[in-house]
Image (cartoon, rainbow, N blue to C red):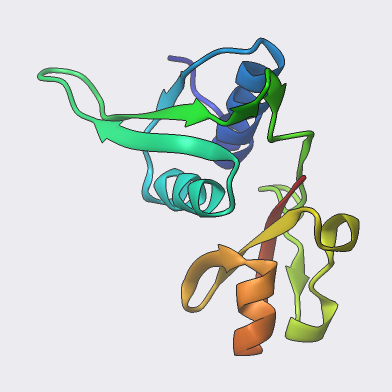
Length: 133
């Protein structure tokens, strides 16, 4: 696999491309941050499942299954907000509501990765990684 300057954006775009192509499954190189994002996407209903697979002699990968409802993907779009060249931080009161609550914001906080709703509830801010709807 090629070297990627923004691994989180790569994971999100692989997910978006897989849903647009109506793929049953997509894979991405493993990292703890990507595994946490996959966990959040599963909890919020954008993925059916995900698993970390480690085959002998190869790098670990994340295999995820996008969620579809009558061939319509649960994911409409995704936007990477904070990126390596321009980090975006928000306070607890500045966390955006995505489509009036129909989407989610994914944040990296001092207490780990979580949705914007969870961060608001705990009154903590952090790095705004992505918006998903």
